[in-house]
Image (cartoon, rainbow, N blue to C red):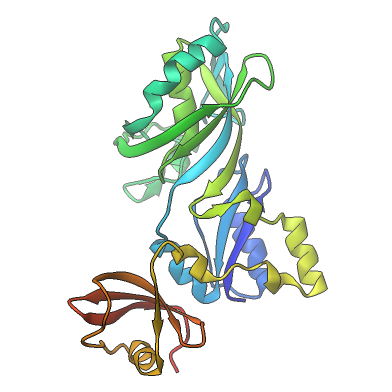
Length: 292
């Protein structure tokens, strides 16, 4: 199995749970995923299978889009409703105050990772210290929120927001900060990732769908080609001589293409990998086919 399986992660599963299950389903331990989701979260989790796992860190687009629900009136130790309530306060603001403060949270900013997160400090994930009741000093990190769209109130004191943001943004923390700007306490009551990089909800399959496809022998049809990750790059088609050079790691001189990074196919249309042209010299960057 080679390619990208976009999973619609169910609530209650960790991202590692999904990977562990798919190792048996796909018959390979060579799996990687893009962007960890909390157990309570659902939605788009791209899983890279076989040789495609080499593309996890080469993705061109790491931005994410989330649909989150902010609940006013309480604060928890985890930043969401799965945690222990630390403080409660009557709700004295609502939609009007929310809409007034949202523009403040769009743009580049610094964000301190929450204690209940996988961020490592001195080699230890923060959540392990948090479970011991410890508070560890964390450094703020740069993030960017590209847009926040208000999508209504599903229940009294709850507000749905669609957030498009950079990799590394903690939505729980963002919602707490939005509530604080309103003069309220707040926590996250629901979270769904609707887009991860180039992959959207329409690409995703539930675990039930994946298991059924395995039983029917149609699992491979659910996999997206690894080239999908690199579609924004210009396409270069290599003839047999150039393809052989790339497969052998040899540069090709006087190559007639502008300087830049390319995705490369052979003359038959098969995706080979990534290459760069510098000063008329074509060099392979990463192959996604076996050298032969």
